[in-house]
Image 1 (tube, rainbow, N blue to C red):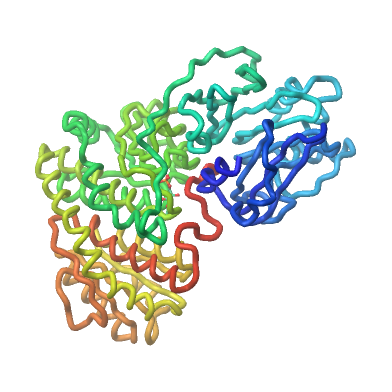
Image 2: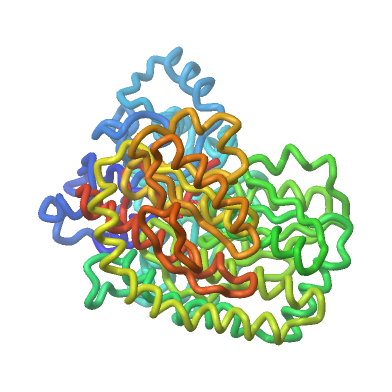
Length: 568
Ligand code: F6R
């Protein structure tokens, strides 16, 4: 259980908890904070348990709000991922029926509704009747003092069943049990499984029994180890030469076919969140520049609001490292409702997005453990750049340019490591850091700002160079650091922006192919035809890393975040 929960911490690490049966009672151990701090409190052995590691949605990070949650009579324990949208209504109903609540979570209604439904039903039927009443997204597992079964179910939140000769596992993702088995059954929406010495799967909405055969999961996506590195993030940053090359090691005919679909679609949307969104934005400049193709780039959580434009001739390219980001999955579902075609670019094999897509391009970045996307970002850029070149019949040229960019990774890291550490030392106590760029430098500025703020907690803001004078320049005063990401073709204009900042006392850090008088600090980026985004983000990733280390922040697990954001 401990190992399984540790492996799921990328889903959230605000608090953790387990429930197990002992002496015919349900026992709960739960704590705020990360599980490693409490290892000794876990029971040595139990063959019947549920456990959870939480990323808070409803209710703050406290022990009361940690899962599992117990029913009022303490007979039923439940763990839950997702959001119960009608929890307020259900809670009101239960309160009217005399139930009391001790947490602020939406989850606590579930064990209590099961208890309520057990008045006239056995445990399995009570769970089923409870599930029917829930609105929203959920993956839940429940145990009862009075039953030898574990009941688990899902709707719009991932859940997989592991089948080994020693027993069954149910989890929101396979890494939790991969050390025990690679035989899995994925549950689909509205499916519930009853587990004892065998399994029974039913659709809880219409009571249909469902037969499913186990599939074998690919073990290539193995757990990554830190090795000689102090943190995963710096290991993953350093791996980028290889991961970029792997990203473009694709079947040429397949890539050309997808590029063709992009070229010929009537409306193309690139859809993603966070870092993956920045990769899409960067690629849209490239498609415009080299393929003369307009791409609509939309943040996944906003995509549903564009559904009015979607038709069966629309192509949606969904980009996601995890393939589990709820906003991305929701966007894809919205597009599918309009019968649009879905292509995805995904890193995690077998993830939900792969199942919703017509075609999937695997990123092959390998497991990314740090919560911050680093190597997956450059892999996404590599694949999207290759698609842009392939769409104008220049697949080979694209491969050549991307390989050249990859070949600079080690050099840019080794030449600049000390300089970036020194820069971090100088910037570590700053309140704000601004990053500006134009054209392909603009998404790099956005991505650089995201890296810096999420890991060092310094406020960082990325802007298009031209936008600065429309408001944000008001924040520039003596000593405010501004990182200027310059590309060859935008050099003149971005240097003018740098001069405007310098005139107000700003401290200018240039990321450019050549030094300039306006720069107070300079990091050299090689000149690369259209591939600067792949390489210029790397020193900013390293700067963000050093800022985190010097400020005493955890560079792999920033506060409040999760690697895989499975709620909307
Ligand atoms: C930032 C970061 C996030 C993710 C975002 C989307 O370092 O990792 O912004 O990029 O949550 O995640 P995926 O790509 O898994 O859909």
